Image (cartoon, rainbow, N blue to C red; front, side):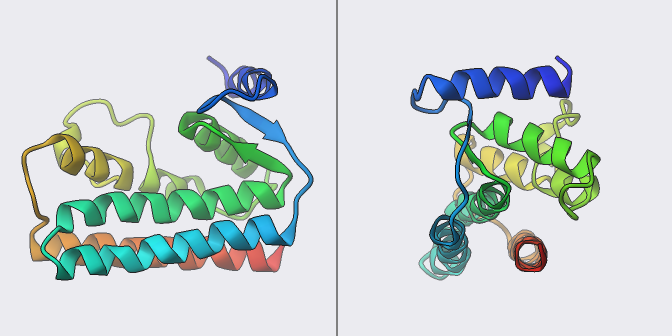
Length: 167
């Protein structure tokens, strides 16, 4: 499905107001944007709490949702609310392609890359790491994995926050 068709489909789904469905046009508010950023920071801090308490497998989920809330803040600034991850990612990608936001495709693909379909267990994409940890029997990230994940998360969170503040 073409990006524009997917976005159109997401907007139609969003009109229904159902759970986990689609995109909706909204009036952007500073409170909503700030709320998503605060949630992103909360989730970023959770990465380290999970690690300290011996649950670093959950650090991967906290990492992903940290960045996901940062993306929700970014699209909220542009007047959208998302109730579906695939809709969020396609909207952000379209905004990047249209030069509406200064994030790069490479940076977005650090979080999620729809083209990674083989060898997902060895993927370094943050969503794939989260899914691998969530659905595998592993209960911890090795120290190097944790270090790379937390550093990449911090870099991308700071990058998205800077974009939001500058626009």
